[in-house]
Image (cartoon, rainbow, N blue to C red):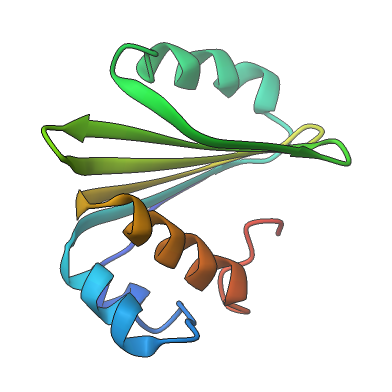
Length: 126
């Protein structure tokens, strides 16, 4: 099990984007970035995470199921801003959760997900 609180200044080094200006602007809006990895412990931690992410507070932004892997992006919103993005990746026995806090819009989520996906340094699939 790994739980990391990654400083934004360090996070900049690990994100790759087609448009660096876009990701730098989104990072300026970011207050907190945390990563939680539970290898071989998905069945233990998934019910706990579900309890802390109630549906009336965290809305599903995107769900994808592919080849035994499930990816879900949840958001917490206030007024017209997204204040927290939760990325959950469920594999056979593993669970990865990323929490990103700040002030975002829907396009910012797509910029973040693209930068994480394009990054060779952050491999959410191990």
